[in-house]
Each structure stands twice: as C-alpha cells, then as structure tokens.
Image (cartoon, rainbow, N blue to C red):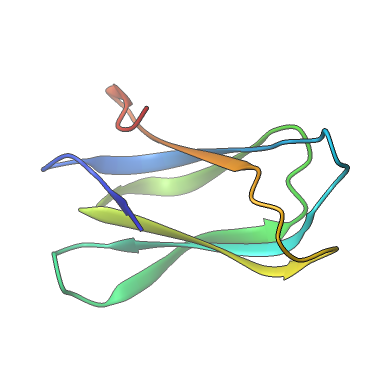
Length: 94
C-alpha cells in the first residue's frame, strides 16, 4: 500500500520495471482507496509493464492510498517495480 497526500486526485500511475534480470510482471492490478479504512476500488490493470507503462484514468480519482498487486509473474521473488502516482498538479509520490 502506498499512502498518498491528503486531497490527492489521481489521474495517472507510472510503472517502471527493472529489466536487469528480464521481464517479470505478466499481469497486475492497481486499486485506490477513497478514505482510510474504506474499500478498495479498481484503478487500472494490465499485462506486462516492460521498461515503463503509464496507466491513465478517464477522470481524476480522489484517493488516500494506492495498492499495486502483481497477479501473475514469470518467476517468484523479483521485486523490481517502481510506482509513481500522478495528479493534474504533478507527482503525488516520489
């Protein structure tokens, strides 16, 4: 889980996979939480990330946290995915 600043309006997530050991992610999901302790709602999902992938929402989504899950992988134990959350105002995370 990645906590976000209060009032974040997420409209994009940037995913970057470390390619040093080859491609790892086969499928993934990203979910947002509108309020602390509240339910998780789908934001995006897909197949393979490669060097970089940007998932764009049709409209900004108010969120206090983002959860990224690798749902299928080529090999277990690889943890080389960087996730940045963006809003219309710029980067919500570093």
